[in-house]
Image (cartoon, rainbow, N blue to C red):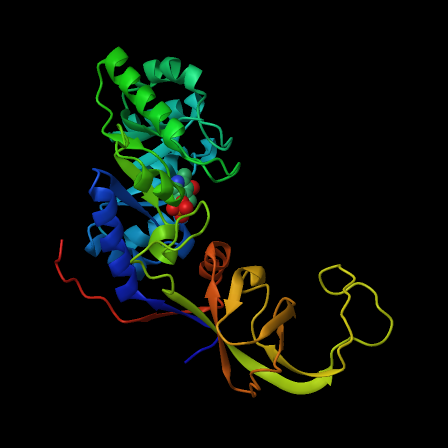
Length: 361
Ligand SMILES: *Cc1c(COP(=O)(O)O)cnc(C)c1O
């Protein structure tokens, strides 16, 4: 089997999707499957769809095109606010987009009309995390204009927290989004089919609140793939947290000094490193590096210590493991590491426990 590679357990992904759908469904919340962390991998996206996910969301149009070309049947939602230069591709390749700029909305409408399409839009509300979103005080004025844009269908509003500013999507924030939805519906005599409260960071709010108000949708990636909520990164009971395993091969194993010797200048990353002298030690070199993965986001499953990495090599303390050339080392991955692995073609994507549609739902 080619190395380095990532093993992907499809049956565990199916399990997590089913559990999360059941959990959030118990209070009337539908989950949108977010595929950006798996780079729009069609085999994985298919498992989501087979287990009842109807909307797939990604921040990149290229990922959406990849899934559509592979024949994955779903509604496709673009997560990142469309760039003005992208509007034609947004209308052509996606069904729904999250928006915060009137200028872009007008262009989306224009292009949709030209192509006899109605493009669905969700307006994002700023609630304090300070990434994308319209200030609440400006919502009414923008909705008024959007409702007149004939190429668009305003299907909902949404918010995104816990991303840039680390702001918690708590009861207050969710109540605020609900009241905005209710106010807009009454004022403009419209129905907002989707009130999208956030992402994997909304788990704590969801489990602790009896009444979820008008929130009926969440966009979920991390909880599906890593089995964790995204505020404190705690595992969610009943979900698998070990769906992905990164495997790398030992290409050198030797007894060498623990401290580099000679005159110290900058290393490959432009740092001047310092190492403690602990005498001779068992060291090993793995054929994986910063070109392949965000090294700070991976944790070895064996008792090794990662000493550092350059673009193509990882150095480990091999004292407790006595690994030999040709052995493999397994790693768990966090969100950033997973994202990086799926962005690089140099890591083989190896699916295990093939999932076949069980028609459970
Ligand atoms: C990435 C993203 C999500 C999904 O976040 P997770 O923490 O992976 O669930 C949801 N909404 C938007 C706008 C995103 O960019």
